[in-house]
Length: 544
Image (cartoon, rainbow, N blue to C red; front, side):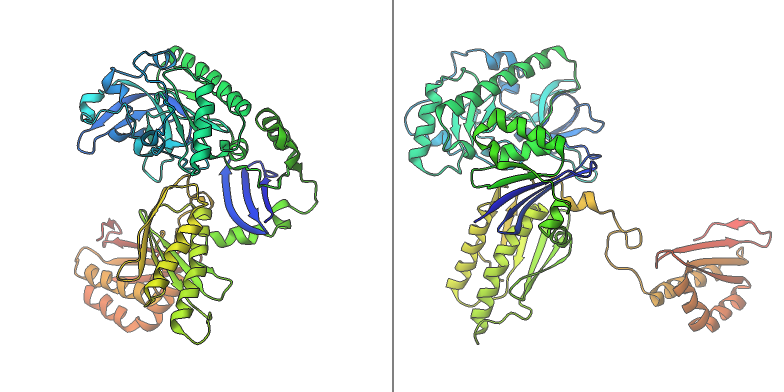
């Protein structure tokens, strides 16, 4: 299987990175230069408000909008030791236990690599040092308290960014977690022999007490020298961050994540990637310097694209990217899936279309659902859809077919870097799942809300608008003060009123002793409606 990473930065306003496998787009990352991206950044913030009813604090971290900090994202040192001190975290602590050489299953099972743009984070923040009882947030923080926070999720709409005090600084093979105090291994490294080898290597390197490290999946086959170099880099970086924390007043930025090109190569590149193509000289040099520093043996994978044809056009990706934003996604087998998204829920419907398998309806449904499961997993990655996802597959009677579709969906989701949970098929034939949203939905940055339908997707017909206008005129005719009414609507609505409602409008004029004028305007939304009412002295009357 040929795998390539294509990096398109020919236009300075936008950076696009695509992962292509055998000519098929499998992953896509888009970042606009004009958009603020805070995920992964570390800030020194100030608590500006506490909401005990939702056990959360709002933190000013110096970017113009407050972040949301839930009590579950507050590191135990804040209420156990009266605040987080980076100097203490760097110093040796006698109370910290050194990592054991035994199975350590309790510690290792708590770690999981969760995202391409996020460092490996502890699952549900379960630390051995965490007390069983967590006090309410109003006993942990007060207004004006300074907190060291990291952005873990971008703000959506009116919601501010989500923050956490569990700081994680990613390297290529390791993640440094200042408050962890022990060694962990990514849960995606399942081979117990490999896990034990990595633990032994990390113990031999003797990391400073008081700080923790997690071995990422990218480090599963790395040597002691490579892991040691990554550890040294992270420790140097953390010392610089610790100095900034002490010197700079809150609110302020402490650490900023790398740009998307470096971040993506660091988090996504594997030896299975045959080539990395970049179409801009400065970005190519920047990526080359990073590879020479972190992964010198893979520098030859990086290539500068010099073709006259745009990079994404050569691989026919622009048309594929356009499909990402469509509601209906056709399948090669002949069926389709329909994706509808709300703020917190995504509904996906599978349609068989022209697909047929043998002469059996059951076999047709099963084969169609298998194809759809693979495409659903791909679309979830490409669109970065998160929250609760309900998949409405074609009904199947046989239990073995239901289990087969569940396995196909789980297998297809294995390559997803977001954390997911998939339930079994419900009695209604639905497969419910949840998926962690990693980054801002690309559709939000590429599209704006339609001014005609205001995001609903439908508008009223000319007949419906005409009926609404007549209702308003009936109400206006009851007001003695109103002697003149001017209605401004879309041209097709004005035509409907002047032609099909002419007699009814004349009766209203006579009954209400008022003059009526209908004005049609081209180029306005179908639901455009402006009503002006005046009295006998030509003064405006408020209506309704």
